[in-house]
Structures are given as structure tokens and as C-alpha cells.
Length: 271
Image (cartoon, rainbow, N blue to C red):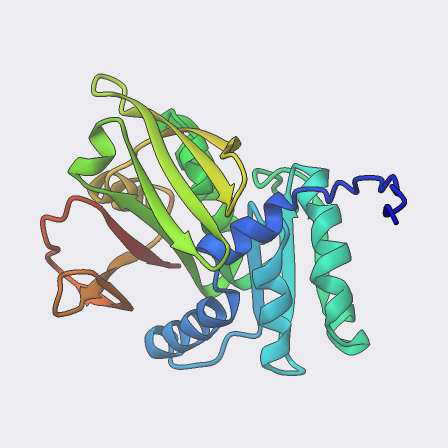
């Protein structure tokens, strides 16, 4: 007897780009612990308030308020899409009390009326979108003015010879691959174009999920601009290496860095 044919409707599951981004490059729990410990080591007191500029889905802000009932977090971003995602997927997962201590603003990081906090975090190299020195100093000056007395700016940065040529790097994760693609680099302007691609196992690569049109700022340039903006002291936190020469995720104060093909560092700027 033949089996009756049944028409099954295909169900398309939307590709969640923010979930894949989070799994590939973010570790908010580790980040906020590092920020808290670093602030305490530098300022000899605990930070109560954190502002996450260019916050996107504001996962870090949500993790910050989990550290204690006295922690208050603020996030600022121009794009309503990741903010909406963060409200649905991160803010909804924390307690009602913690939610009350999260304040998200859809707005410009150059707004002089942003809330004053102990710390401001400028992460994921987002401020690299400021390609002109006058624009970047305007941003750092605004941070200086909107940070509390004895406050701290935490900014990540990256570079290395590998960032001065087109290349693509694949990182395999559980069930998918993440691709960091440097498409172009202009040595006259230091402008570079980057893309993030993903490939779910058994499926075609999803290209240009995220695109970044940046200027590659060097550490000396950034420190000079921060001081020009008013910060009295800057310290570079350099990443240590494992026995096989890979980054170990531990960042400590450093005066000199290694000549790596690709590196990530933090700059701590003190008011």
C-alpha cells in the first residue's frame, strides 16, 4: 500500500544577526567585572554608574546592574533597531528591580546633556566612525564633560600589520562560523572597510551582516586626543599571551606592547 503524500509547508526561521554577533564577539559578564575591578584599582573606590556609549543591544548595561543593587546603567545609541532587540532579549531577562536601574536613550553620543556617570565605556571600536580629528576630540570632550569628577573613560582599540591589508579570518563556533573580513585599507587616510559574515553549518555564507566604515586610529593618536580633550592621564592595558602566542584575555597596564599582526587593547583615561 502506498504512503499518502503530505504537503509540508516550509517554515523559515529568521536569521538572528544580533544573537550570532553576541555569541561570536561579546562577553558582557567578563567585561563588566573587568571594568569594575579596573576602576577600583585606579580610583580606589567602587563605581556605581556606567554609561555605555554606542550601546547597540546594551547587553553590557544589563550585565552592569546585575553586579549590585547600587549599580545604575545608561546606554546611548542612534539606531532604534538594536535598542529594540536589547529591550526584547536582554532587558526582559533581568529582574524588575534591575530593569528600573537601566536607562536607554536613543540619541547621539555628542549630546551635551547625557547623564553624568562614574564610568563611560566606548566599546567595539565604535568611535572609529569619527574619521576626522576634530570630530573625535569633540566626542572625547563630551565624555570628559559628562563624566563625574574623578571618573574614568574606558575605550577599546585595535590594530597591527594585519589591519593594513585585505584579509578574511574565520572563527569556528558551535554550529556556525564567524568571519571578520577586512575589505580595504587606504594608507593615506588610514580609512578601512570591514564586514562580518556568518555561515551556519550546512547553509550558504550570509555576507555583509554588519559593515564598518572606519578610520584606524593609533594608540598614540588616541592618547594625545584624550589629553587634549581634558583627561589628565591615560593608561594602556595590553593583552597577555598564551604559550602558543595567542591572546589570553588578560589585560594589564603596559608601557610597551608587542609587535603583533593583530592586537586589541584598552585605554583608560582619567578625569
